[in-house]
Amino acid sequence: MQDRDVIVIGAGFAGMYMVHSLRQLGLSVSAIERGSDVGGVWYWNRYPGARCDIESMSYSYSFSEELEQEWVWSHRYAMQPEILRYADYVADRFELRRDIVFNTTVAKAEYCEVERRWLVSTETGEIFRCRYVVMATGCLSVPKVPDLPGLGHFEGPVLHTADWPAEGHDFSDQTVGLIGTGSSGIQSIPIIAHQARHLTVFQRTANFSIPAWNGPLSIDHEADLKRNYRALRQKARQSYVGDFADEYYVSILDLSPEDREVQFERRWREGGFNYQYAFTDVMVDETANDLAAEYVRNKIRAKVKDPRMAEILCPKDHPLGSKRLCVDTDYFETYNRDNVTIVDVGADRVVEMTETGLRTLDGEYQFDALVLATGFDAMTGALNAIDIRGRGGVSLKEQWRDGPRSYLGVAVAGFPNLFIITGPGSPSVFANMILAIEQHVEWISALITYAEANEVREIEAESEAQEDWARMVSESADKTLFVKANSWYLGANVPGKARVFMPYVDGFKVYADACEEVAKSGYRGFRLS
Ligand code: NA7
Image (cartoon, rainbow, N blue to C red; front, side):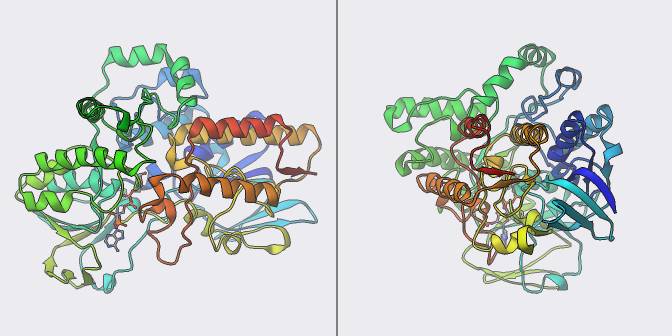
């Protein structure tokens, strides 16, 4: 048994900063990490084309001005290898690895009420005893393998985008089947299409995607951003998403048809998420949303030469943005290649996997290798994968059977001294994730500091505060179009998972202000004893 003040579970960007921050408080801390190195989501998601969909200058830590100035991002949107190099650099620079236990999976975390300690056990039987536990397990870290009948019968390699072999995979001379057209599919399809002899994409739901217009960051532009970093970080903290984009608070419906076209085109040319967030009504008004959506559909029709393929690729069954918007490089153009086919497998058209391919209601498709770009058991998957037991031995997974409920997305009633970074009920995946992580790490660190200074031994969310928060999160989501899709935000991609809208939709700034208010009030909604 080893004793620590704090155990952090996970050493992605959340766990890394949490370790750094707790050390500054003079606390003893270890992070326990399943992978063999730091990086979290960027450690596992090594599929071809993996890239961040938030711009690199803002998708980076802001806690150290030296780090900010030293690190040089090569592109507007960074590719996975570069982000992993950044994680490696940060780990070296702040000597984080000495407090991280790698290649170790946490199986259980149990609260002992008598000792007021958590006992964290690993799959190999090691036990760590600590006063606080911080879950830095990530929102998109448990790959979802679809329940395809006969999947085990397929004789070729099966690769999941979120569990890609470190050595990569050479598709040259192979025929490839790929299931899934979310961000991971949309990023990997153009690259795999270049390598493979033939690529067949099986699409259940067509998705909206906006061009990334990715390219190298010029030295001048980078220098300019770095000169203004403090102001830009401040701007990010005052914004909805938490990035540097200019928000454009105008309603689509207030614009004339001509001005609308101008604005849609301008946002399309800027690329990325601002196409969705630039307008006030796109996520709350169906007419406004459909105008924005039709603009994208027309772009798809203009890009894809075969009109039949173009219609398959045009999303029609959910509002733009209700499934997370994708940001692509040459995705739709890829379907103009002779070696790429798209097959619509919506409406339960998949029958089974065979030894050599996939049988659908429309025919049989053969290929050498299968890529699953089928997403994640998002937001709660990694938390539920650990047997977390709070007061009275109550299991978090059981408590969340009908959907996750938390206070501020950071704490759960009945689970004292346990904190979740970017948990359900916080903006998390709706925000620039690194900023969301920093805000949580700093807030949790301040709360622990307060507890240490005031001889508080137990910090626990009150049930009533938690219920109020959960109700508010769900009522806010219900006022938007975010709830109008079978998305992973709602848990709809995992059969049997409770349908509860998990992210906080009112934006980073409003959320961070609410957290600040709670702190200023002496941590209203928490029982400090
Ligand atoms: P997503 O966005 O959940 O996409 C998964 C895709 O896989 C999506 O198109 C799914 O269709 C499809 N899917 C899942 N199961 C099946 C089955 N059984 N049959 C056919 N198609 C299936 O995951 P990503 O990894 O692309 O991206 C996740 C997030 O990571 C992304 O939003 C960014 O934030 C980064 P569906 O839409 O469910 O019909």
